[in-house]
Amino acid sequence: MASEVILPKVDMDMTTGTIAVWHVKDGDTVKKGQAIFDIETDKAAMEIESPADGVIRIGNAPVKAVLPIGTVVAMIYGAGEEAKPFAGTTPAAAQSPAQAAVPAKPEVAVAVAAARTDGSKARATPLARRIARQQGIALDAIAGTGPRGRILASDLASAKPAKPVAAPVATLAAGMDTEAVRALYKPGSYSVTPLDGMRRTIAQRLVQSKQTVPHFYLTATCTLDELLAVRERLNAHAPKTADKTPAWKLSVNDFVIKALALALQRVPAANVTFTDDGILQHSVSDVGVAVSVEGGLFTPVVRSAENKSLSQISIEMKELAGKARARQLKPADYQGGTTAVSNLGMFGVEQFNAIISPPHATILAVGAGIETFVPVNGQPVLKTQMKVTLSCDHRAVDGAVGAELLKCFRQLVEEPALMMA
Image (tube, helix red, strand yellow):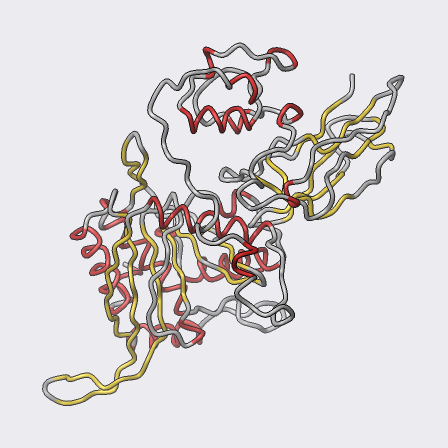
């Protein structure tokens, strides 16, 4: 029996995916477990293996086309089966951004377990599940007309909503459409860079965050002189590797990660995640760290950062940043997390507000260390100071809790010896 090759869900938040490269050609003979294409997410490019032995017939799934998760992109025909051409689905890249999340021919999309976010056990295509979720239709009460009783989008035409219909969340920023925007500018005065999978996903997540997460912001100024002195001493005593280079080199960001992780342990009311059913209280501090790469950014996670030494955090962050820039992060490297750090100090930015990345309830925006004169016993003294801004999800973190977290963080940064107690 022929085997379907689908565009899989390799990240918990994925609704669409992009094929970065095909490793085989239409009509090739493939082996089970052989890499047949790479799927591009906003975090990495991951190899997808053949589910069976046989002859592969590739559908209308060209490289860089944006396709809905669950789309059948190829068929594999075994011994004795007719390896007939496979048409596949129309790629969403040819559609508008709002249409890109909807298959042109939903009947050929495969319902995968990861897409069943509504709790229903009914077999349905991803499009049918999406329509049912938006219109409040109970799938368990629908008789499917698709293969093996699968519910198709057309089966929902006469179904009545079981609950009030909620307005769908916009996938991209609302506003003028592409042609209306381009009409404002003289032809030839601009070039167009198509949205790749990373940039489209970043746009979707940030719009979702600003639309659904009520942000508030708290800013504090931290004096860094003691931290910088401790950092210099620790780096001077770093052990040497076989090639006589230091085994690690601590950055200010390593201290920031450690301080935020410890502060979350001391203010557990801020180490939380909001869900519709309740607040998740985390026992460890998993700190995501924004890493800038060409075309976007990744946020790999330092797990249980409160239990790691500064040198461990430094070594781990160097490895994670290298994997991020090489597009080699695995889901375990970036999924989850309880908070995040975004540091633009190295670019000379003194202060900014960062957007929370769900499911986190907080994110810390870190500015540059700036030398300035501050009054000490009535006399001006030159100090290095750094502004940090904590963004909080007000559904889970109240103002006083956020202020307590920031106060604890500041104390740890200004007295770094406390991080080693």
